[in-house]
Length: 123
Picture 1 (cartoon, rainbow, N blue to C red):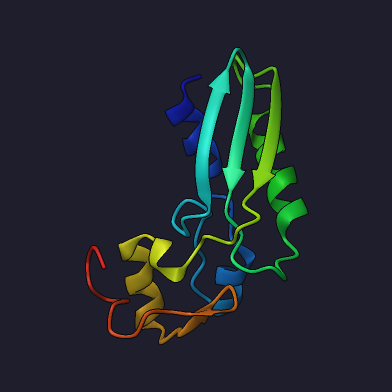
Picture 2: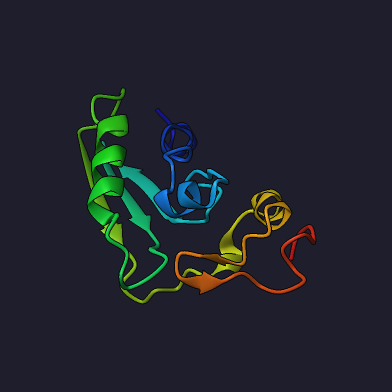
């Protein structure tokens, strides 16, 4: 499988923070997948977390491993998490931000959504 095909298999893993808002988003829409690379069958997925208090790292790791292990050309799966907390609500895909704004969601992952930008395409 190509890196793009592998990414497609994991990007719809539900983000529990968004589920709690009533606007379910996948980790791809949330901007949580920092990178995915496959070298000689060894897949490394680098993930952002939304907050230092995020307790979902084990859930994300398990889901990613389950979806990628056993796929053609995948020998192993390793998931790493961004310890620098570089994720911001602006990393959310613009269409997903619009859906959140439509529900008047102002906070996600413990962070405030940007004011006046949630509904702007490309903001």
